[in-house]
Image (cartoon, rainbow, N blue to C red; front, side, top):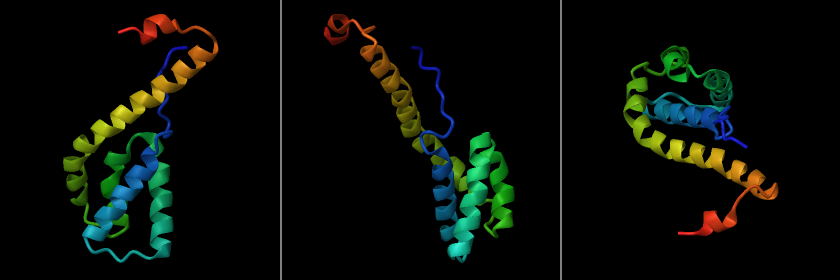
Length: 115
């Protein structure tokens, strides 16, 4: 089995983008009620899987009365948080591959466990 990096939001990227955007909305004093949350999460969840989340965020923010410059705050923080996301994605790729290989008796445990 070869880990090919299937990242189709299995790690929660869509929710991550929506949560960060909600925090930015709160930071800029946008009135957040139930319908705002439902609509905002729906739009963010539609955009995040396409891979253009950051490109589309200024337009989405403008539609929800969030200053489009809030994207600059996310761009500044994202590289730091992305390191953890990358580590999670790598583990997410390797672990299932290893489990399948071990169940198929394709892992040489003597080599794997040696130091």
